[in-house]
Length: 286
Image (tube, rainbow, N blue to C red; front, side):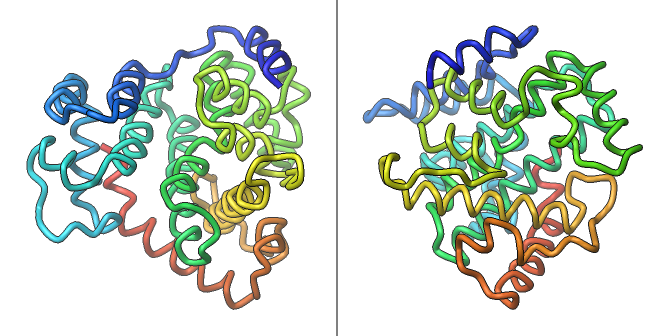
């Protein structure tokens, strides 16, 4: 796996590094005796991440019972795993070299799927909610990297997909040597993220997980199915898209089938994700 991913990474022009603040925060959180004052110091050095962390901490999405006014308070209240998710989400947006309509859509897609994956993981007890949030956030990391490394090619891809009425996934081979799922997984592997996040990113569309070969294979399959379902929910609702896909039958997507969901379950999930995303959308966009 590593050799193949190294080949993919080496083929990418101007591969963006993991955001510096994310590296520092992950290093600190990896220490069992983490220093919260140091965490606050590192996060406060990036005003955009600091502002988003405070805003999201106070949103209905995390349902805190009292207003959080300082970074120190936010770090103490939200907990280390949620803090990790929020910092990664806040710093990922900074990977964009520019910020036009296409970048806005990619970012909304990432946040929408992260929120949706967390909601679905809790609703259907299908995965750890914080891991699902990150898996949803990274599902289309490959698209963000492709757009960052070759914006002209990615814009041509997006415009062709729109003109021909197809998904960008179906046309990626015309413009790039690797599809976005492979690129995203290769970058996460290079950044030393867990195998579960790498594999969920690699297989978020095909769910081709060998449950017997993978450690905790059943859990990995359910995590990946959760992300697939959240992605289809976003497509249906138009989150991160030019417009909603009213004809999409989410109940028949692979994720819903793997999780053995009834049509009513899926409809309730659509309603819940739409309500939560609409209510909390502005909290993730500073």
